[in-house]
Each structure stands twice: as C-alpha cells, then as structure tokens.
Image: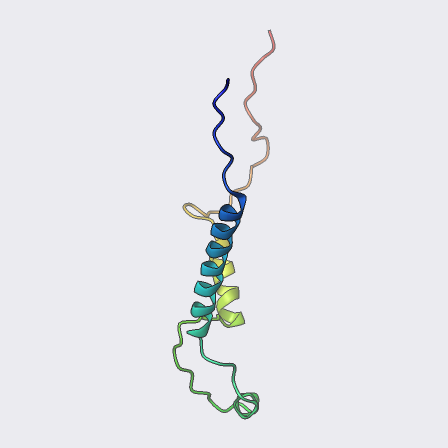
Length: 100
C-alpha cells in the first residue's frame, strides 16, 4: 500500500488568500486617506483668476509644472562628455583593410 499525504484543505487556502487580499486593500485605503481632499469650487475659481492658492503639504506626489517637465526632458537628452560638433573633411575617408 502506498502512503498518500492528504491534499491541502482548499477552503483554508482560499481563506488565507482572502485574508491576505483584505489586508492589502485595507493598507491601500489607509494610505489614500492620508491625502488631502480635492479643492473646493471656490478654491478652483480663485486659482483660475490668478490668485495665489495656499497649498499645504499632504504627502501626495508633487506635480511639476510644464516648464519644469520640459527642462527635465531637455537635460535628459543632453549628451555627456565631449559635445563638440565634428565633420569629416574632404578626402578624409576611413582606413580599410586590403583584401588579399
């Protein structure tokens, strides 16, 4: 006779997986609650009219202005090291090996 080990209880495995998912969702919800609420219509109107809006740090990601984003992109495209412009002169060909 062969000794078979009992199959793991699938209900227990599903319960453990469900509890893990619940804990993950709860952690995400707690993290979201740390952020400040969206601005009111009055605050939006004041900002649209050009009035400075007082912003409090709330731990949410900092948004960059379009100018900051453009500057960051241009800096990333700059080559590092020697950036001189060089062109080949007349008759300055490449050295090749002779076939032989």
